[in-house]
Length: 198
Image (tube, rainbow, N blue to C red):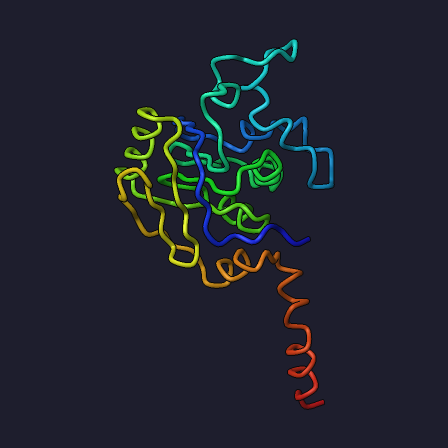
């Protein structure tokens, strides 16, 4: 399934300055029964967002109208724990297109890239600058430029570069998942196969 093309995103951000957020906190195991990639956003951080009676916990950042945007800024070691791809589905389905952290669990990072969420790993000092900027002004904007591989605090112009594999970068710019990529080069694959000796 194709996803939204990602080139440059300029958005306010939601700060979640908690370290070691694991995938069971991102999407609790009891919500993993569905097989389609829809509806998971409703249960993103379910146990942190809601009380047992389904009333919202007013002190949780996703329930705070002060913060909004398509960028989630997480604490260090974001997405640790089990490899469930549903965690990335939940992030995407909620409306986030980018997650920023000073460190990601590898499997979560790859799952994000597979579903159209850009994981941007920054240095710890730069992550701290982002959190401080949002605390000072919740409307502060962050620009994430995928072609240039930079993240910029718009208010100050401070920026950092981030790494991404060339293959995943190209897929995100074109809105491809792995199947879309193969479909896009179908003729090249056929031509190559036809040149192979029998």
